[in-house]
Image (cartoon, rainbow, N blue to C red; front, side, top):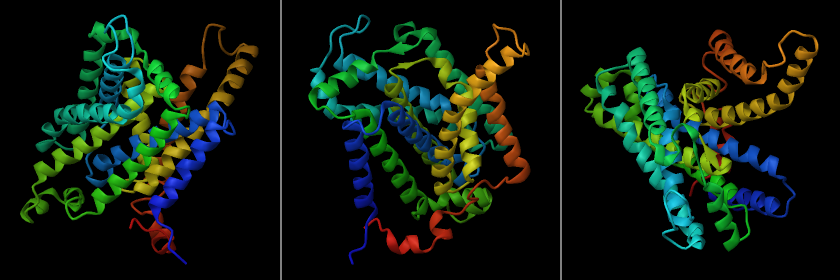
Length: 358
């Protein structure tokens, strides 16, 4: 019997999901959950390159997500829509179908360039000092966006839904769902090939012992530069997808709390485990979605018992009680995360025989 290849399986999964969404067997809510899972998988797995495989301690991943979100959104609005700030569309709206993945890649490239802000200081800093630098970079990016009034400043930026409408007018399929799935699978594939390659082994050597890696002729500065740029570039792609899912972005959406979400997903899955990053992103997304139903009920109950004033919104606070609590519990009871540094193929060896990238 012919061996089932990974590309064939992924193509089949993508086709089934898109077909069921187009035929409305999957409603818009389920579609949005699937899309947020995809975005979180990209964020978690890309963040794991630096914090997991390379062993650094970065905390500002959301800043690069913001760069990708704004660059992709502004380019798409300028090219394919009539906007009161940027004027008439520079290209016919129907061309958005073909050019959308390229604008996403441009946003990712811009985020990769922004990653140099962190990569260069990382040459001489590690651990807590690098964490401070990455947090500072996150604040620098957000503050810069807030002070650019042409892209909405603190008010936020919108208009991305017009791009999606233009794509749907050309071919009536759920385009943003399709692109989220494609770029999610592509991200996992790229990271897997990178970390298992001879070149990618250099970042794992840095994690084990940076001095010994240099002695063994590993160019640690170049490896750090590539790792940070790849990680931040993929985060930028996630930001571009995130912006078009919502149709609106605000700089405060990419603050330190968003970076904390990325940290929780990486540590929950396991440092240096791509399978763990995927699993943790799925579980984390489902947890947040479950809180959408649980928290409003708790909020109403506590107001009814007069434990909270009527003007107090527990739902805005409870989320940031649970997420840090997950991180604390992980550090206490399972600091290695769900998978540790193992992959699913290490636990189930038959997967290596069943699937193939060839």
